[in-house]
Image 1 (cartoon, one colour):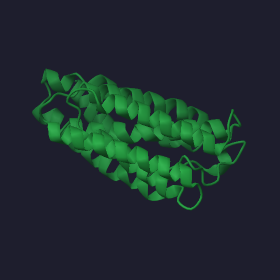
Image 2 (spheres, rainbow, N blue to C red; image 1 turned 90 degrees about the horizontal axis):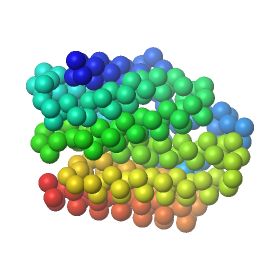
Image 3 (spheres, rainbow, N blue to C red; image 1 turned 45 degrees about the horizontal axis):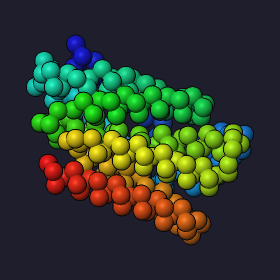
Image 4 (cartoon, rainbow, N blue to C red; image 1 turned 60 degrees about the horizontal axis):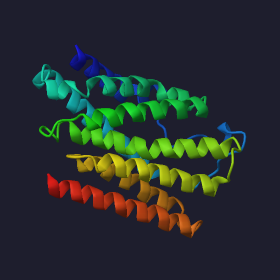
Length: 232
């Protein structure tokens, strides 16, 4: 039954853009303090990673249902993954109306995705650990960005730049902790690196210090991915 639920949730999650609309970042005017070209947000092209995430999660859940339905190793990550995907199905709609609730929900999604990723077995990595890693890695960056936009957008504490640094520090702290757990797939760090490179490009010509910081963070993530790849 868990395998069925994850497959159905994956289908619903992947179909969400068709009835909720594509998402390329929050509308600047959704916030009391409009977030025009926020420095914490990756460049627009980076959101294209969702196509790969949707497809790979679908393939994974299909394989899990028809080839690993009763496998205890595959069963371990299913509940947290189901929770993350079920919440994620409605996230696009929520993000268009309430940045605060979108931030709350994406952190819950991240928690489920990371827990599921940490429970993946050492075998069948291409079928399970890799898609979950890609999903959790991107959510790590996206959750930190959402937190920064909400903080700056509601005038809490520091300005946009300071919140961007906070987002970078939070994403890296979570990313390093997750990727250094034993036996982790490099897909997690690769997705985080993808996001941080896009943050660096977003700040090119506008904020050199943040651009360098994001690029350095991406390099750390790439090195972690390479380390995980070498260890198999």
